[in-house]
Length: 110
Image (tube, rainbow, N blue to C red; front, side):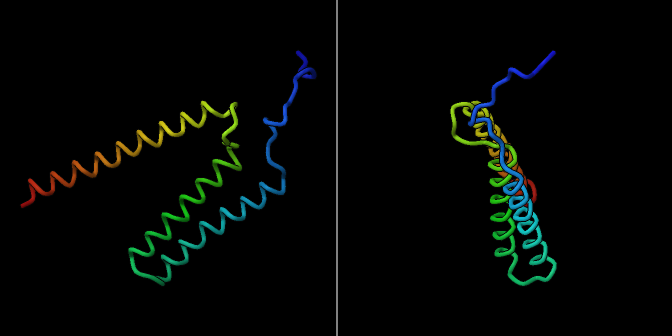
């Protein structure tokens, strides 16, 4: 079976070696920054948590765009819909669990 006749369009183009290396080093930096701040206790707990969440969200975005090649093209439409649905379900589970635990703590621990 020969794959010589398969066509690659420009929309299926993956990133270059240069972009992979740049995003890899950005990911390392976005991991080291919160780690160093937590280990050295530079800021308050709320500020540390905000820095950690911001670095995590930026790193997730970098991975989705540059490594998983998610974009707004028509070929990626179903992948984006699946991603948004997954985020919605996880948000419902986390917020619902926190709400249940808060109400249990309020009603049973007093």
